[in-house]
Amino acid sequence: MKVALVQQTGSFLHRSLQWLGRAVLALLLVVVAGVVYFVATEPVGYQKLMSLRVGSVPEPDWAAQEAPFDADRVIGSIPYRGSSMLALVLPADLYAATILEGLGNCANKVRGLSYYLEQRDLQFQRIDLLPVDGYLRGSGHVLIRTRYLHNGTDRIGLIDVLDGGVPSRSGIPLDLAELREAPPFTVSITPLNARCDRQSDYYGTFLDSVVFATAESKEIRRFFRWLESVYVPFGNPRVERVVYNATAIVLMRFPSSYVSQEDYDKLVNPNWGAMLIAQAMTWSVRVLLALLPLFCVLHVVQRVRIRKKVAVDGAVAAAAA
Image (cartoon, rainbow, N blue to C red; front, side, top):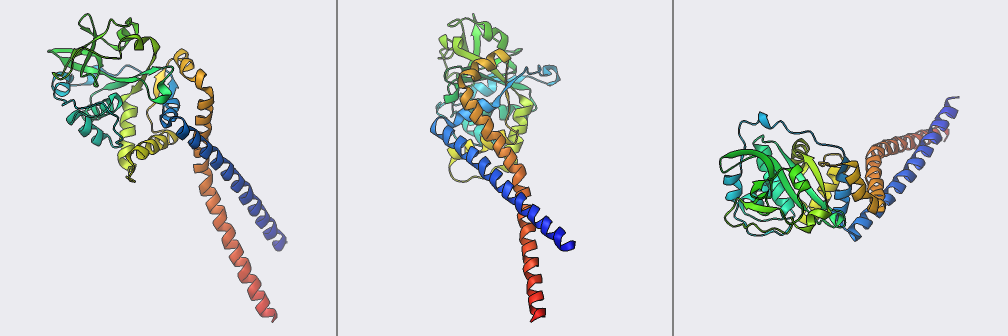
């Protein structure tokens, strides 16, 4: 009876390992295929697709802040020196490179300013302007929405960190709802920085082609703390940026970009194949993270059982001799 039970247990363990091994291999193939697809197209496309969520973002409690963000002082002191993309991971490094040194594109500068704001417990939202035909390639623009002080006036509205000013219409600073409704070529930039002018490429016909997406400051804070807790450099900044962003998405630490259902359909329906690949890859990694520990435990148990069986068989053979 005991021998039969042991044999049945060993057979079940063997079959379980075979099934798990096949499942792990299949999931790995899905992940590899997804990685190859996005590397061959646009790596940033995976991040853009998987960060999209249907929903609305609650209005921050602006009154809870003791004081507004001093836009004249902080934006006015940025030594603008470039707009090329920076492949930096840690938010503190981005803050130093963008706000203190004036480097980086719009997304870099907004992330740098986000770090400045969250370190001072100031409320904010990140606003992504996503062109339907180009956002998977990284096209678009990023603004920040916060309570700020400009020329002695305390207001809630948008700041264009890349252009060093405030989107305005007829000289009146705009909030998000007003920018959504603004016709092309009616918006200009009210400068906050002496190095910047009133010109921008993002408030003409570009406005007709974009979807507005909003990210919450609390999710951005959580993402920053996660990066600071896990970051280990491995020598290639561009690869690091892609890897850490993708890992944050898999572990649900990457900030979501919230849009309406109508806007979600505009962005995703033309790219349903890419979204299917991104979701399959993401869930395959999540399932792998759950299965691999079980696979390893069962493998160790099987090895221990085999060693015990070999030892017992050896002892029996020695006794028989």
